[in-house]
Length: 185
Image 1 (cartoon, rainbow, N blue to C red):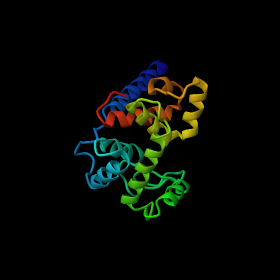
Image 2: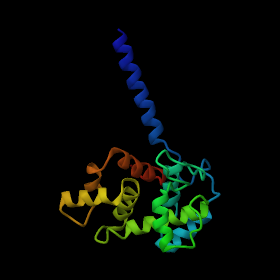
Image 3: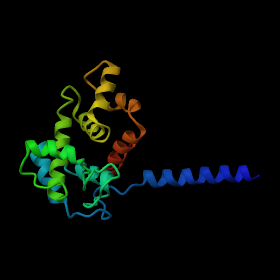
């Protein structure tokens, strides 16, 4: 009898957590502050061009930090875009004007710049898939995606082909960003 109740409780909790995971507020919801939007717009335009939808990077920051400029992960990642100090140092070497990783403006600039570096690593991949692979690389590391590419023996990667080989956390990360943008995960 208690096993039946425990099983029902587990199933109920799973269903509730699934509903909450699926029903994320979209990036344009009033739930999310617009305080940093000017930075997302500016640096998206600078590194991805004027026609690129800057809200992808706001969605990424929501997935990374919940738009908390003071967020620090247990691994030491900092700010809205959750940039590791060593990664920021590399980015800052190429962009000395990126003043401080803990300042929202520069954290966003560095995160989008890094997204662009990752995005350019997939030149034979269709544009939308390139974005998903860049986001996955941001989360899991480019080496993880490179290893999958070697396993699949292709350099023209598609998100749907790569996705099953990625860590669950990374699949969830990209899926959440897609849901925040109003796309199916």
